[in-house]
Length: 475
Ligand code: GLN
Image (tube, rainbow, N blue to C red):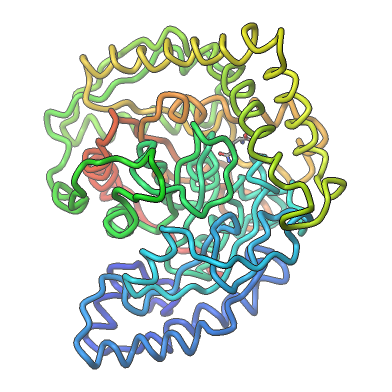
């Protein structure tokens, strides 16, 4: 099958542009046409960059002048949590519905300096609170693989933009799973980097000790290419690493022979859906066949992770959202939706005098225990394989009125954020055959590793990917 330009990976698009098989203007137009055609139904984009095509034409000129910028002319999408100078940034909330930032987030500057073309800003659960994409003040995003289903969240639009081939790559944020879970719901690769590897400066803060800035791509290799651009120290974010930047493509082809991969025994006792269990077991077998050594491990504090996460996340949210007072910017606080109000009330309670020790402080202590579980585990194994979501994607409307049910879907993802470790979600096939579309719903698993082990995660993910048939969805 001849791929349409908007279906290309970063790698193939860069190659095609270099060889002058097509121009960035053509590539960008293919993405914009796809957005025009499918966005009214999918609702992946909230704002389109009117200058995208002009910027693509400029990139074509720069190429003629021998520019070697790594993403020159590659059209990408940004979650609407990223500050973009002169381009509306809403956090998918009515509070910021007409807010135009004065500056670019560090990651946005890095992407622009690398030559990327910003197509627009993508939809998500308001303030990144949610796991289905339905909690946006601009309406839900639909799953392009089957539009009766949720695409996952909170980075719903970025994931959907990939699954519908509206963009070549897309940025997101992951505070408790918001990249990995929507990636696994849309047959996409999603990276949550180590805390502090990618700058948070200029990205709407959700919970500052958990927020990780990552991205969605069509392949693992593309994820490494993207991280090569976005990672590294930023003087504007004191929590970013001082470590020298690495070339994340370096170990990609090394395979998994001899690599020890841990399977936490606790992860099977957490309400895991039978279809997901079957799928992950077959993925583990594939990795074993490729030469990995599979080892059973224990992460004894796993059962406390979700409770611990929801106390910490609400506490930090209540503090971060205090700045939206309707005086300095944005509309007044009556514009906050129910989920934000719920978290502000909960977080204000857990931080209040008399309760702080019992809740926030206690949760932070448990967090240390969870982190130590991983320190111990990584003495025995190089990486860990885990489900992303306990269930396949669910139908729109199914959990939206039951916040607790929605929170439970985060059980496998929040752990990496609490420990600050990286997680790479890779597609691992399809579950069930749906009558309407005659194809199943996507699923994936995640590979977790020690802090700053992204290269190893890419190495494992890439090896696994070679065992998979890559299906391109028709839209
Ligand atoms: N679903 C989780 C929550 O609602 C994670 C959100 C995120 O990672 N931004 O908090």
